[in-house]
Image: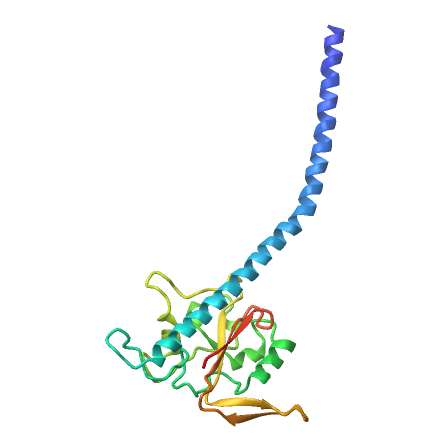
Amino acid sequence: MKKFLNKIKSNKGNSLAEFAVTAAMMATLATTAAPRFSGVGEVGKQNQTMANLEKLGKMANQYYMDTSSPPTPNNPSGEGQGRIPGQERYDTQIGGYDRLTDVEAILNEQFNKWDDGEGGQWKSVFGLASANPSYVGEYQFTDEDTDWGQGSGTYEWSLGLSAAEGPIKSPYQQGHYIYIVIPGGQQEYINPNTGESQLVECNECGPILVLADAYNPSKFYTVKSFN
């Protein structure tokens, strides 16, 4: 009996020691793995928002192609000259920039948060009604309302969605998709001697679209040219 009791005590001791070691290892693994899993989640959000921006760019390209063709029964949206959703004509501006170098300067320097005042130069793709209501009061950008077609660029963007789809939303709580359009009919010329920029007439030059995620426009954006 004494040997039996000693054996039980020995087994209990080993079990407790093993448990302590296992618990310590699990704690260490949890501590080191948590940041990695968090990083994976962050990378996933980054990839998702860039994929969404690419999808929006393709939607804009399809709309431009549709409006480029003359109107037909199969393509009633044809206008004979392409434009981007929200534009009245291919040579109209949306937002606060008339040249791409100005946009690039902003994106390279300071526009890195959803509540930045620079947002006032941008327009919402799908309208503020589709944004997270917890952050709408912090946004500086606005809806793109117009007086032609169905009355808004938001509507024209929505034409690229299937009936089952809603507005494309950012994976970030504070995120929201915004855009500006550099008007067509012009070309930016950089003087190689002075580095100064000037606009020259260019009838065959199409508009330039810049899309961004308001969560951090300087990090998440795409530029599309249309000709």
